[in-house]
Image: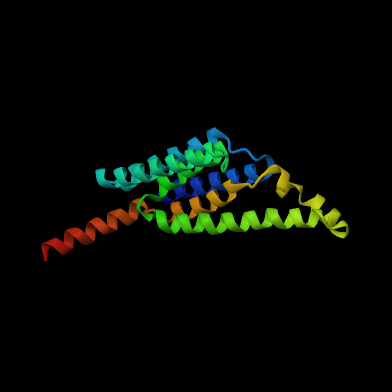
Length: 178
């Protein structure tokens, strides 16, 4: 039996690796995104999610994929970002609004950092500094996977653990008998 926190820790580590990959290479490996999705299903099975909960999570992931696919089609988002967004919102389920806020704010900060580096490139005195920041150079695009990964960590941490569900079940059992 896997300890409840191990799955969540694995999901968070996977997201950190994805953020690093996006910063370094502007790539979000499909294998890592698929592993993150698989960890959701392991967590859901361990916590005993009911049918309604599965449906809400799948709907959130599907809706996110539809919106992200449109953004990809319009050239506003990379394909890996679209897949990671769907995976993050699959984890988020009914907690999508707080996760959306975190992803949006982190995305804004990442975009501002890219713009700041672009501004530094135009100043000769800061040319050396901007060369050291080539991992966030504007010519390489915005690494939006970083914002998605941070939002994903929030989504993972908002999910109940197996022990949490058992505790809630015990409260319901004792609450109904009195």
